[in-house]
Length: 183
Image (cartoon, rainbow, N blue to C red; front, top):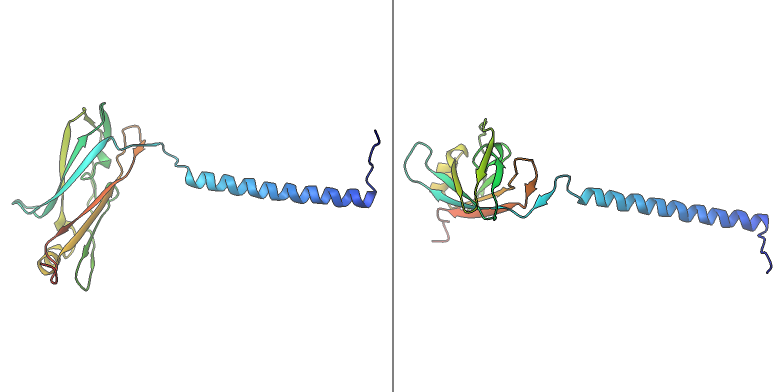
C-alpha cells in the first residue's frame, strides 16, 4: 500500500477548503439553532382545557351593554386557572378585545383600561362553569358607534394554568348592530 503525500501548496489549499466548509457548517448550525429557539415556546402549551362562550347583552344594570362570558371545563380532570388571567379579570392583558366600526370612517374604538386585583386560583371540575362579564362602555365611542353602524367585536384569550403553563389560544368575534347598507 502506498502512502499519498500532498505537496505543501496542495496541503495548504486542502486545509483552507476544510476550514471554509467548517465555517459554513458552523454558520448553518447557528442559524438552525436560532430558528429552533425562535419557534420553540418557552412555556409548555397544551390543548385548551376549557371552552369560552361569549355573548352580547344589553340587559339592564349600570354596565349594560356588555359581553357575557361563560368558561366551561371540557377536560376530564380538574382545571386550575389563575384568576388574574381569566377573560373578565383584567382589561390590560388577560383578553385583548378589538371593536371596529363596519361602515366608514371604520374607527377602531379605544379601550379605557381598569386595573384588577384578582388573586388566587379558580378550580373547575369536569363540566363545571364560571361566568363573568366585560362592560363595553369601557370603549370610548361605543354607544355612538353602535347607534350609527354595526360593530365587529373580536377577542382572543389563552387559558393559563395556576402553574403558569398556557393552553392553545381561543378566539372569536361577533357583530353588534346593523350596517347602514346591510339590513
